[in-house]
Image (cartoon, rainbow, N blue to C red):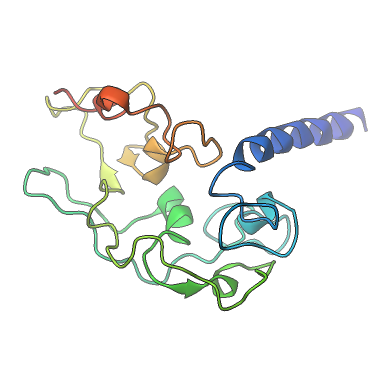
Length: 191
């Protein structure tokens, strides 16, 4: 019983720490948030996470995976080939996929106050102007550092969450560290 109570207390502390950070960011979709897309109640976590009937994209995930991935990033100087986004990138793309989707169509266990509200985060550009995701990080490429310190690899691939920490808004737009002087970029690139 003591272990159960201790675990529950730790989960509550961790949850309140995330909610404190998220409460002042664009990811706060609660009724108290500053976004135009808002829920009908003040629960911050519920618009992404659910304890019951979660989607298959990730544990406790309250959204459906995107059905179609829009244009992938391309560049004439890129050596890697982006794959169809997977893993944590699908979690991000359940909202940030550039397709205007009614919010109520993407959440599993909560509704937004106005069902006619739509998300159009990338204004039709897809991922064509962003960093590639679901690419293998080539540790033998001399243009890349062998082991990035701050950037998180998922196995051997780069995903959205490699550079973005969605629960921490201290380095907009949710970057793992400030990109002043290209600091985040230089975590991987030898330039």
